[in-house]
View 1 (tube, rainbow, N blue to C red):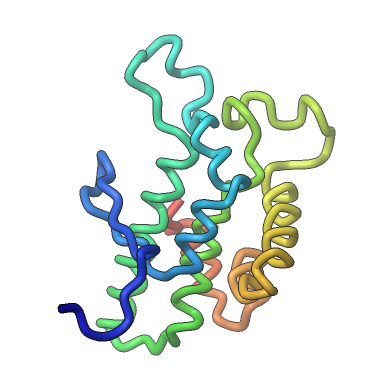
View 2 (cartoon, one colour):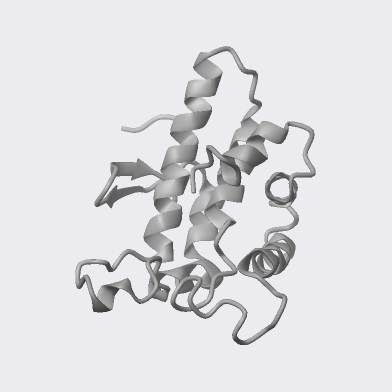
Length: 167
């Protein structure tokens, strides 16, 4: 018999690159299950590369799950080196990396700017995040702050978008 709290939402995914990836929290599971996120399954990470390299079938969905895994590893390493990261900050950083590409359209960067001039995927990502934040009762707010680089611990944003990011 299992003791303590168990959830059907705490899943493990078998990733082709990183092996078994654990979804860290129920809210991350719910984000992944959301239709906005699920659409990433149909968006190719590598643009039109699959025409030349038939094996280049990596999707934005695959990509962000790998980035989520790398974020958990990076945060754990930083904590082992003595950096104090609260659970709320850890979960928010994972949320930020999970959603960092939510605004991408088809064929990666190949079509960016074709339909809406001066609107990049980062702008669209923020729009998606804000809408998701409403749906999730504003539980994504700190993750959005980290994504926008408006949170006091700037290194968390650097892990999402910077020279040594998980992207």
